[in-house]
Image (cartoon, rainbow, N blue to C red; front, side, top):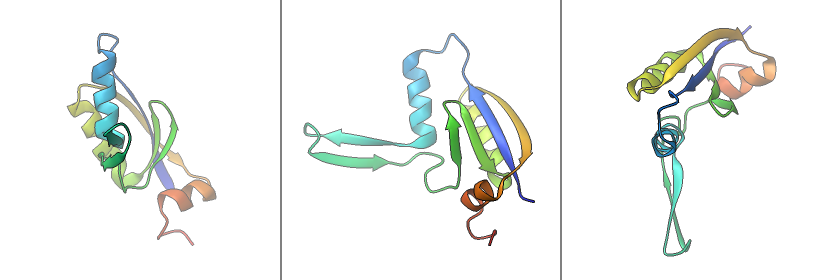
Length: 102
């Protein structure tokens, strides 16, 4: 039985669309294109290279060691967080703990 975090996050209604977009880019990263799309540069985010599963906009499935770090990151950027520990299915466990689960 593997455990993980379900983390639901968001911003207050007063937050502008630009501020929400900036936050999403800092969290997930983005591809920056220049010269009319000729060149593409990947800009890493906080979760780049870390095991996670995006359930939908504003909802993440995270391993136990990463849940508190992401919650702190969201709060640092003036967002709200709701989180719970959950039991993972075998498929989800393989995605979040690729080296620990056979």
